[in-house]
Image (cartoon, rainbow, N blue to C red; front, top):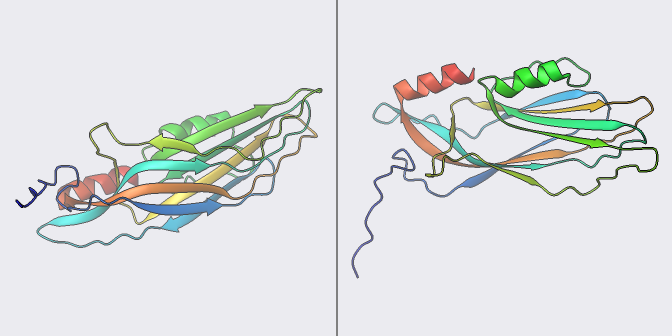
Length: 195
């Protein structure tokens, strides 16, 4: 039986690692109009071999949103961000100006925003929301490269009317990734753009 041809490594940057792995993060928040950020060190191996460094290549992100129950005649907005640097958001909700700024900054990998509005006759009740999948590959199998040692997960909530109630708990973010080898020059460029 002939041997299978060896891959040229074009999809893995020469690392040969085509087996994705999951990295899970979770953040808890029980207050309304609050912003919480938590840092997660990455399982990164900085192996220098022939002027190369190893980075994380993110292929897909799965957001598992928390259960929440807004009161009548109100809105409840939730926003989640995955970034390579601490967004240093102020406590309290997430005003539109901060949301728009964080959405486009260089260190933001992915985000979601969800709003539920209710009326006097209907109170929205989302207790088991389905996970939200975001594909980060370019259609040819190449993902987003992360060269930092830490990811930051942020959950922000904002109530749009007085008397509204909401409970946010245990938002989860799962990252599907694999390792990729890049040149030292490329590694330095990625670090500079993400920090």
